[in-house]
Structures are given as C-alpha cells and as structure tokens.
Length: 143
Image (cartoon, rainbow, N blue to C red; front, side):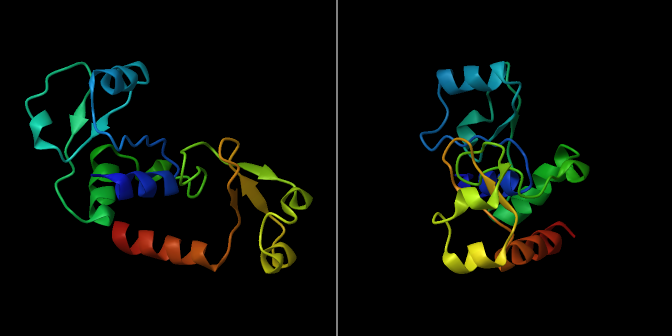
C-alpha cells in the first residue's frame, strides 16, 4: 500500500491518484488515458507488460519512497509545496479571508490572512506552524 506516499506526493504538488481497492483493468485504462505511471509494491505486477509504465518503490518508509520516486523521475525541481489537496488531489485555490469566517477556528481566522480551498471537497488550508514542520521533515528526507 502506498497511501502515505500518495499524500507525500500531493504535499509536493504532484497529481497522485490512489486506489485503495488496487489495480484492475479499468484503473489501468484510466492510467493509460491520463498518461500516468503506476507506483505499486504489489509484486504480482512485476511481470506486467501492458501499455502503462509501472515502478516499484523498493522501501517500506514513505519518506524514502518519496525520495526514490523524485529521483527516478527527475522531479526535485518540479515540487510545488502544498498546491494540492492532501485528501482528494485537486489543486487548491486562494480564497478571500471573509469566505472562511466560521469555517476555521477563530484563532486561525484572527491570525492568518491567506487561505486556500479545495474546489472539490472544500477543505480549507492555511500556513500554520504545521507547514514549517512539514517542510523541515521533507528537507531532512530529501537531503
């Protein structure tokens, strides 16, 4: 399962779909149509020779998996930190501060001026102290 890797890729701004149910002919067709690469740890796909490229991140640690994927596909210079929704993978958009009144904790509303929102799930994002911790974690992992 690569759910944590999918979230880390989204954190870095990459379009990363995650299928909990696993791969089947329909999801593989979707990957082909979208020109995606399949990332999996499922070894039954090692003999797969279909139209969609498959890559097997060879580590159990999601941060090391991220480093492996970014290196393999030369993506380090394409990172757009926190530009996608961590939950549903959509690109987040700036929203007016007034639009989030009553939707975020009072303290957050009072102490932040910049907010972003996912157009699909409507989750709201802001740059709190957790963002610095996330950046530091990524910097340590990626070197």
